[in-house]
Length: 400
Ligand SMILES: *Cc1c(COP(=O)(O)O)cnc(C)c1O
Image (cartoon, rainbow, N blue to C red; front, side, top):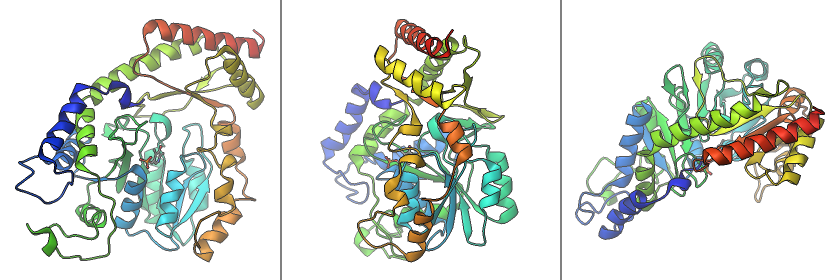
């Protein structure tokens, strides 16, 4: 998955362009920057590569989610329906805007189960936020239909699925807005960075101003800009954008290698009839950044994890059920509402309620799932060795 595996002369060249002028900021300094606008260039490249009208870069994927929520008018007390399986950043962003995260069950797509979303809708629901985990996607047609029926916003957390598509459209460009993360371990990286993508001009204009203290960016003199609303600083720097610009040009290469390596490893696991794979909704194309597979039972899965550890091949394999960062089972800080400063009584009550909320359907899926991260630098020989060792571990556990 990570673009950092292919870091080289192209990234150095783009960063050097910025270092030559010394203008490290994305706005202003029109003369001294000598025509170098890496953030602007990257935003244009994003709109062209992924097919959306507007793109606003941010300092991180988390900042992109926060910005998207604010730009969409989501705020205090609004409920956002999101999956129980995601990276912590998803609920961090929800809390940051004063909204309430409503966690619901996932299905074998590894993200929002449409039925669970339907059941969670209340008069306070404002948004449905699928998180396209591990390179593949939610059943977006089903979720879009629910949103339309109930007049809800569809916001895609596509931070982990750069390059995946659904019915011909890039993930992250299908909802009212969508976000990518360009942190160090994502498909393409800026070191730190993110983007809000949208086809709605107002959402874009709001994002543009919000990420830069509310500047309207209408004049030529930054100091004379007006501030139509209160903003924040979630700007990306030119240095970070420069890295991303080199990376986005390599995206097609990354995706092709990833697909080849993913399918190659999958062919080994397919030899075992008891192994099933993550469901990709009809019309979806997985970015192939992970191979996510299921064993018949939680016990067998834990035994396979132990066997892979013993064989020395566990690195790069994620058993999310026991992972500190990605599944509700380990989010004690969330369930205890452990924050450094006071949050609203409404938010606190919603978080404490999670202590007694059960997620039996998600438990039954996530406890049987292992996701293998696909490296861009594996050789065929290494995939063969990995595949054969994985198969041996699985067969041993299944008693075959
Ligand atoms: C990485 C990630 C984010 C946040 O990205 P950062 O750039 O690290 O802030 C948000 N959601 C998901 C699902 C992610 O994987």
